[in-house]
Image (cartoon, rainbow, N blue to C red):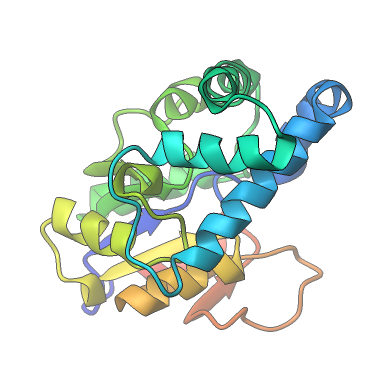
Length: 224
């Protein structure tokens, strides 16, 4: 067990399960709602760009996100907010019922917990229902969504809030994610140690303190 780390915290999408397994299920939605999805993604990129120089969104993050998306689509933001919630936030969740985790993910999480590490989870999208469908609820000391703080990754605010929720200093937490730009960069900005889960064909360490392509490697890194 490592003396410099007291907790492992994780991103969810693409980190605990492979992205392709969800993306395949998303194809019908993409074909039907391509304009909405493109505008939604563009709005989130605008928010990420704004938060580089501005404080996190004050008030309703979801309303602000809908307003930007509505400006792109030239539609009513009130109706669009309801549509985004219905089709994306709630509509995508049932797709997680039969998604398989990366091999050895659950065993590794259980081993870390048994060894005395705290476990945390921080996602850009609300994670609670997804965790239930993935069979991973009940494992965590803290589960947070960056949107509740008005800032998307890689803004460091939600990472520092995660550390606070886990009652640990940021430097005692290893944050594990699949995105170098959002997970690794954001956790490093907050002062956390970082691990990057990558494709077996990917080169380099992604700027992280540790990189791996098999959860057994993370198990050994933390416990041996």
